[in-house]
Image 1: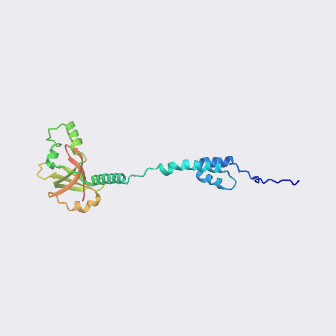
Image 2: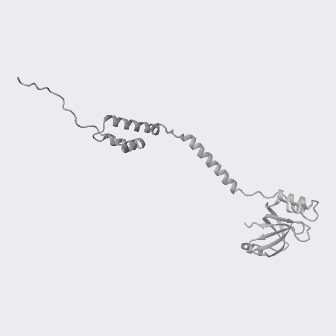
Image 3: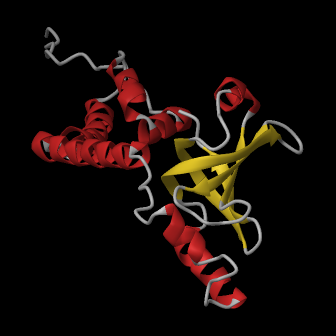
Length: 210
């Protein structure tokens, strides 16, 4: 009696590769690189699915988590910054205010005929006049070489009855041509910055040469 043969499926002797420890670490920390290694021949469908699901989980916050910047609010903020910068620049470049009081009025606060005490003079000077800009018509008393450099010009306020001087200003050496043209007894419009006050010598400061 002839033996019956039965048809059967051939057994698949090829076993799926296992994911190594190092590859697993790579998939866990950098799935966007190492997940693709599971697509190579031999890795099971389960290994591929797990690695790419993990990749998707990590990519979702990157894909949908970023908020689109509001261009309108950004432009407003930039405009505010630009406007504030312009205001600051304008303030820095704005000329300092000039004293409105006349030369005679200011000098009378600090001369020998003043009713103020020395303490009151010092306080008034600090509060109102120290480092302030003036622009007065002054009469030349004397022009001389400065103690250290430049030139010194002694002035009286126009209409002043002072015996010696009311204002003494220092000029830089670059102003030689200017001071050489000054004539004693003549009045000139002078701009300067106040620095000191003295009962005997009057006001002192630096000329501003324009």
